[in-house]
Amino acid sequence: QVQLVESGGGLVQPGGSLILSCAASGIIFSWYTMSWYRQAPGKQRDLVASITGGGSTNYADSVKGRFTISRDNAKGTVYLQMNSLKPEDTAVYYCNANRKAGTSSLDYWGQGTQVTVSS
Image (cartoon, rainbow, N blue to C red; front, side, top):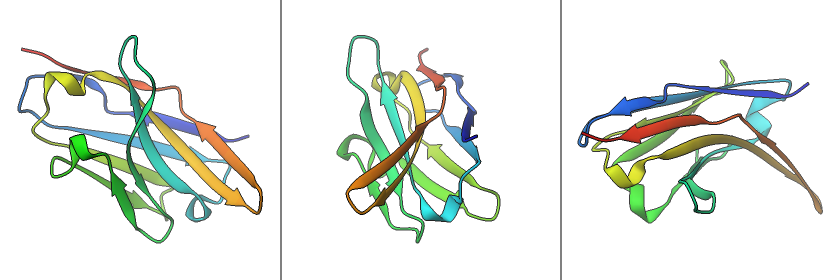
C-alpha cells in the first residue's frame, strides 16, 4: 500500500519560512519523480516544484529563488523549503509521486497540508 504523508504546514507571517516534508512508503522511492503541487480555494491544482530520482529540479516561475525542493532517497522523503513567503502562497500543498513506464504513468498523492501566509 502506497502512502505519502505530508507535514510541516501551518500559519506564517509574510516574509517567513516553512519546511514541508513528505514521507513515502510502499514504493521504490528513487524510481519516482517527486513533486509538490498547491491548490488555492477556487483555483486549479498547480505544480510548484519537482525533483527527479537523480536530483534534477524544476520550479514554477512564481517560486523560483524562494522555494527549494530536495529529497533524501535513503529516508524516502521529499522536502520543500519555502522562504520569503507571500500571501499568494496560501494554499493546500500536495505531495505527488510519479513514475512513467512506457506508455503508462503511475501517480500517487498525499492528503495535503495547509499553508496560510497572513499577518
